[in-house]
Length: 182
Image (cartoon, rainbow, N blue to C red; front, side, top):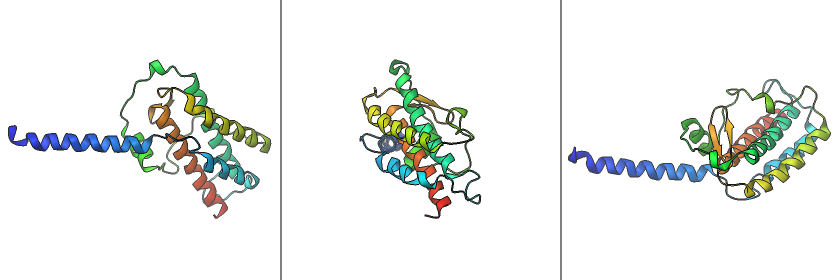
């Protein structure tokens, strides 16, 4: 056993350093982190009715509405959470997805709370966008242990929740870019 002690200690040190690096890449710490995404969402609203069924079965408006509902819903959940109840956990899928900044297409089912209505009003998109901009400023005033429950990633604290919002929004923006041939 003593023979492998240095190897085990080295492995644990490497694992600790790797976990620290991954966690640093997963947390959002700067206000304005989502501004360029929200600006792009605003630019895409006039193209709301565009559809390319080879890319997505739903039009751009669906992705816009879903993205904005997700941003605002996560903020609302974090704002309503009790930071004292937060219990961190290790979730390999969350670590992989948030550190790589990638969500595979067509794999997950959106919770009903963030599904767009059958008919999406343009004025509602602008209203949700305004709310998202305000919420992303207020998010940095929430306790670090403010959290929300994700159906796949588990309980996510504020820093990782904001990173999830960034990755999720980019995921849908990529789909919209493909629909629009950008």
